Each structure stands twice: as structure tokens, then as C-alpha cells.
Length: 107
Image (cartoon, rainbow, N blue to C red; front, top):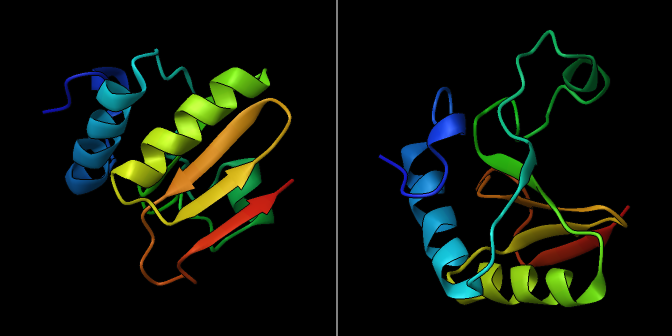
């Protein structure tokens, strides 16, 4: 059971949520989840059928300023996440071992 993310537990990887909880604890700030699990029928899943969101291995965390982005990314990396995407309004993180590791990308 997740400490911070009970509202998104359905269809999400328990291992992923455990590590995300650790990152949230380290960051010391709320992680507002914009997007978590997406069904294969979701419009964004149709557009990107290999999305880690479909596997329950990804979330997008709201981050609209540089200080928040830094705290989130630092915490994610501290707990071992190695796939991070940075956008103007969110940070994507996933634990999809079927994809290239040790990457940070921008949107």
C-alpha cells in the first residue's frame, strides 16, 4: 500500500509506487500527479501505444517552477529512477526496464 499515492494505486505497479513514495519522502514536498495509469483506449495511449503509463510504471508529476523541478528530480534520482522527462509543467518518471535507462529528456 502506498503512503502518499493511494488515489492512483489501481493498475499501478506496487514496486513503482514504493520507490515513488521514497522519492516523495526525500523531496519533502507534495507530488501532485497529473497522469498515472492510462488504459490502452486512452487518446494518449493510442497516440503512443508503447507508453509506460499503460503498464502502470509511470506518472507525470506537476512541476511549474525551477525550484520544484529541482527538488523532484533530485529525489527521483536519489532513490534510483533512471528515466525522467522534463516539461514546462510536469516531470515524467517511469520504471520501465524494457526501455533505455540512464536518460533525461525534455518535451
